[in-house]
Length: 297
Image 1 (tube, one colour):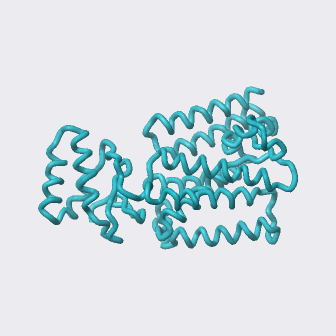
Image 2 (cartoon, one colour; image 1 turned 180 degrees about the horizontal axis):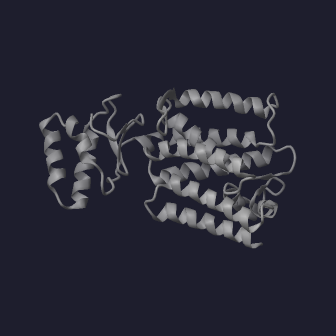
Image 3 (cartoon, one colour; image 1 turned 90 degrees about the vertical axis):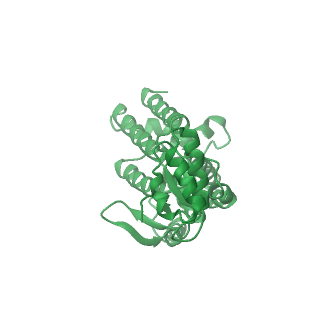
């Protein structure tokens, strides 16, 4: 194994270690890890990255071996060129950041891993000819499928100056599915892209979202992270009980007790947009339909 491949493996290990054992945003960490892996593989091979693809890409000719199974993860960190990388990173950030603000780090990682593994294996079993699969597009497809089943009526929000597009995730998913079907059937030139892997990843994301919907969106036992802005909830504390819990949370200096008061208060307050109860994810207040309450009315 050459130095470029070893460097990519090190990036993969470090990326998942940071996601698992720190509180850094898993989407940002994943995007940075994928980008660093591409840069290292490009620089260390003088742009001739095929040797890295051959060692760490997923080979559809050896789907039954343990070594090849492990490349499902490493293959997602490899990309053909800068445009392949940028297209995946942009969509990973747009969809992933929206998802991550509404579910925890570990739940996000669960969706990504299960969807990526499922999509890659399905593609390996259905590929017409042996090939090497690389790229993070299956991860992106999985996130889109999960958002479709978890928050179908949530609007897609882009960075400023665009902001809220007014387009809901179920509409985006429907258009995306139609394009994937057309490309996979050859009605549109597929240019060598593994569209069946995209569809399998999307399906896995939908299934995970449906199975775990109550766990992801139901009552949360998580405590808010340090720095949560409790004043966001003050205008919604209309009853005496709400005001009492708010006062307790604001007055206590014990971070654990403050977290308990904030969590319990959030459970009692309804989302002003849809009426669903709130829960705490990290430093965010989120309702069962995925609406964020991150500023005062």
